[in-house]
Length: 164
Image (cartoon, rainbow, N blue to C red; front, side, top):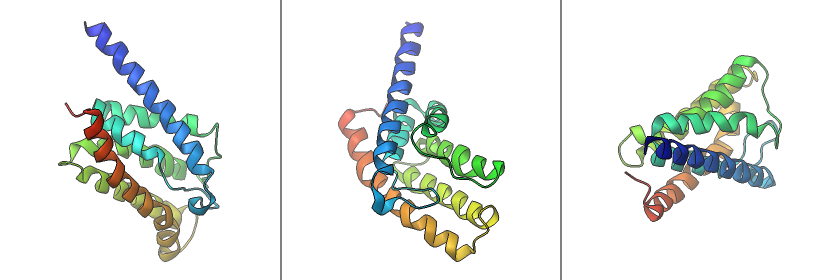
């Protein structure tokens, strides 16, 4: 019984990672929300949020971390320094796994805000922009990403009855 549960959870994690990559690829094909130095409307983050709400925060973080090397196959990584990579990819995507730790769906707002702040700080310190330039650059795609998550994640989770 325990082995069956483990295999099922591994299958879900693989499915979520695959769906993330498909949606990330599609997001990168939409020029309106694709920024020149990285960043795009994150339809793919919907999948990370659903994975976290479905599988729990630990497995949600694992799924997010699993998608990072896969992203490099379909879109270039944009970073100036290895610490910038850690902030803008590893931490910025892993934080989505923490969403179910917050009441109801407030986690969607909280984790997107944390990701935005990570990009904001990285923009100033690693891309050497002003605070305002980093704010406006990252807000252009992060605000719509949060709105899309707030609309679709509760609808999908409720429809799929993934809450335990």
